[in-house]
Image (cartoon, rainbow, N blue to C red; front, side, top):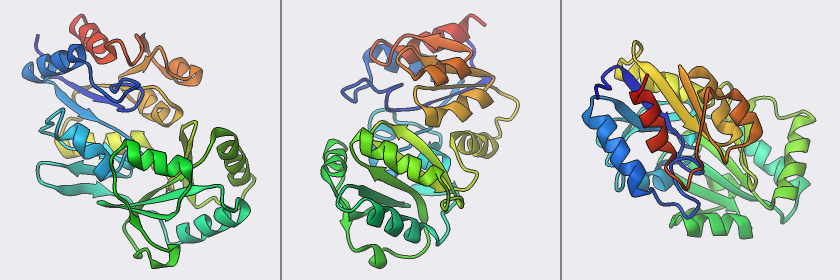
Length: 269
């Protein structure tokens, strides 16, 4: 099959990755067939550099850049450098301080700073997240985190607490950022106007793939903009209802070979 006119980008967690964070052989084989047929395959993830690297580089062995930080950066692991990035403004430090004061001893925070994960405040949810991804963070006080280079902030807590944080943000006073719920346990702060669709667009520009048929796959609300922007927006059957409503194609769940099904569908177009 000739895929030379196609670019396919997928979310990782909940889409390409199974619930236990693997990529099944069925999907790996389909991705390899897609790439050998001339298709451009990449990933668009909320993960930062350190959490994405072991999947993108060590498992997928991608030869093209990836969208990281929920769209705030396009990173080339082969060249080990950012090809595009959008930083959060200096107000972000105050946002962390205010939310931490409003929810004392309840929230964990990650400041994703290019290739470093800073953790000024930690809780059980945040520690479990770091352990699951085998990431050793830079633990330091909020005021000691370097200025500039902030690409994303992750707020981690039990879902009912994250619900309350989201309500607090939506009441006002946090408008200089793009806020997105990336999972039940995580609420994220991004640069204003940035989401996965922005990162996807920058990836397409960098690759000179503007004339290719674009396909994107995801499962959670942070994937919706990318799914809507693609020529073929795909959702796994385990996705949120709102994500499935935005999609053109709904395939099997993330544990059953969703990417294989998407690639099979594209083959028949």
